[in-house]
Image (cartoon, rainbow, N blue to C red):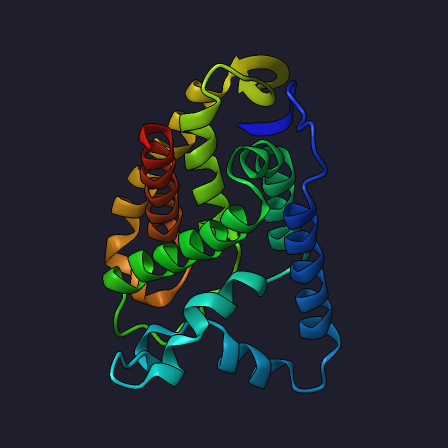
Length: 213
């Protein structure tokens, strides 16, 4: 299930969303072209085995891993989801609050994955946890928005319009079940499913708080 667009574009320029996309692309460029790219990954990615909560310097990767990516399609998919869902959420929250919460959602996502793989030495990178937080907030704020979505139907791909609440809840369930299924192999790397579910829940909870204030 691949979202293509929503039908309610923001009435304001999502400058923070564009900034986050720019920084992610810039960081990926540094990864690709840096002569010391392996050192860069080892230093700034989230490696659970290196985390020590009594040494604050080792905690920085909870933030920096959000701007690194494992490859072009990893970057493209995360930025695609961010571009579709972030503009409305940024307009709802305001630019500065959105920036703070985006980083916070990514931090929570990293922590969620860390909890299930504390001894792993595999670098964790990607904005997907923070983007999942955006999706969780979108689910709360705009459940009735229609999302043009590419989905497989009886072996063929079709483009249909579906409510955001259905599309996002389905996505969350797939990540949750995949995360449970990945538990026996989580220390060996792969997709950070618990980062996705943790980020989504963090976005959902903070958006609920905003709605109730």
